[in-house]
Image (cartoon, rainbow, N blue to C red):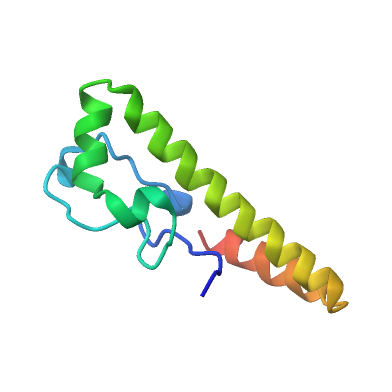
Length: 99
């Protein structure tokens, strides 16, 4: 389904895709993410694009981030509609403190 996916690596859920450990990583940016970048490109390919300073790297990363923001704000709207925003915000803040 269309739900917010979190990165499970790195500090605060961030990946340093310039790091050489990603040069052969065939995973999408985020497992289960349905965005264009995750559906069609690997971490290794984006690693290559970043290290060769190709503009496509920024386009793909921005596309992924935009998709994640859309899912995040959809979750907020859904929580508000169900009158559950307080619970949503508490859970969200707790998940950020663990990162």
